[in-house]
Amino acid sequence: MVPPTADDANTVKREPIHLPLAEFLESTPPNQIIGVPDLAEAGYSSLYGTKVDQIRTPELQLHCTNESCNGPRFFRFVGDDAPRLLTDYSFFYLTYRCSNCQQNQKTFSLAAKVNARQQAAGSGYKFGELPTFGPPTPARLIKLIGPDRDEFLKGRRCENQGLGVGAFIYYRRVVENQKNRIIGEVIKVAERLGADATAISELNAAVSETQFSKALAMVKTAIPQSLLINGHNPLALLHSALSEGVHDRSDEECLELASSVRIVLSELSERLAQALKDEAELTKALSTLLNRERG
Image 1 (cartoon, rainbow, N blue to C red):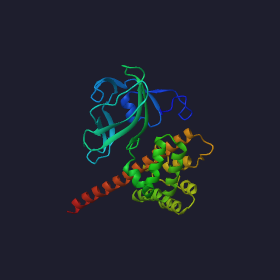
Image 2 (cartoon, one colour):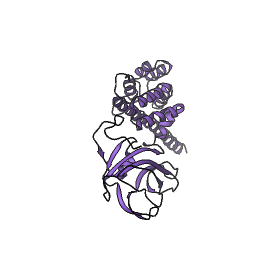
Image 3 (cartoon, rainbow, N blue to C red):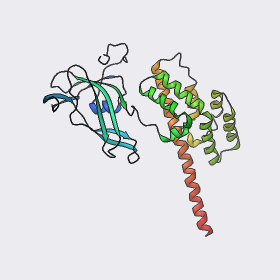
Image 4 (cartoon, rainbow, N blue to C red):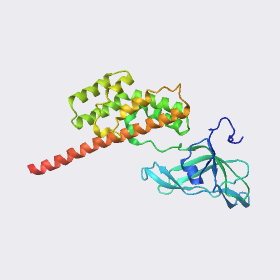
């Protein structure tokens, strides 16, 4: 069995994509055939005892979740011999290890072939990777959605694999389930910033409202200015996106909507955390100065 070809009905119908090998491994989601101009290099295989075309193993820059890293780090190939490449697809794994902590690893499940012997160009197909493809979900977003973490990550996996309807449904379920938790965090910020009683009352009424769309519609004007995203109410943006039905939309349209929901939700979580942090720092600074005056 070989990966699906560009003519296969199961593949995404688009023009062939050509990417450098490092970019293909770092940032391409699974289930796509990618043309790779720098796929192969000449090497000596101790396994075969001869010169072969083998896949290059460039240094990669990936996110490392180890506590000592917690950010982008360089990863290097682990192994003695790089896999051999032929003019037909070869199937293999590539494992990389973080050069900083020397602990976290990333393993790719791949198929690849060269266009011709002793040439660098070829094609690659990514079946998957472990940990799974995609940028890490911010810790603040995970904290905001709380009990629905697993549901959200299912949606993230759907989004990474181009499954728009699935991603949208999971994200909508998460926001609906955690509506009160999200608005509750907005109320904390509003109270810390001294919002007027009318705004606080509208936010509390939204928490009591059981119908999701009505609840989000009720807080269109009550959200603090510091939580606005480019002047727009993020809850209103979420309400607009999540009110869309999926039955009359293509998977590509659902994927775009799902991605937008995730991005807005992530930005809202950052702004909520920052607003509370700023207020806490201001309170501490005022306390320090007031205590010095009294002393």
